[in-house]
Length: 136
Image 1 (cartoon, rainbow, N blue to C red):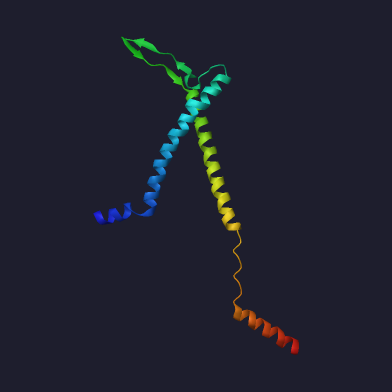
Image 2: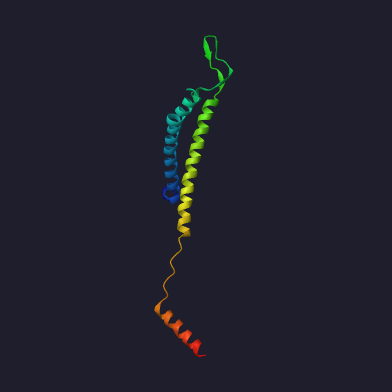
């Protein structure tokens, strides 16, 4: 059973998938930082210093009952805007990566293979054929 599991785990597809997931997680952290630390402050500056992550719509305000604080019920649409921007940036980055890969693949496909040089025997046979055709 261990041998069968080892064969499954070491198959190329599983290892490639694991590498993809790890790189994807790291890329996600980079994009999150890009959105939160670079893009959102610029957007906030353009909108007068507004931080989108703090935008909420309160359905029910926080209350205190029997000495216990009951949290407010809110719709956090500002966080949704942040996640939407993150998604758009990731989607655009993936679009650029796929577009670049496709253009490289097209260049490989478009490059014509050089025609192989005709062997000398075939050249000689073609000359003999042409001479015989002229005689007849």
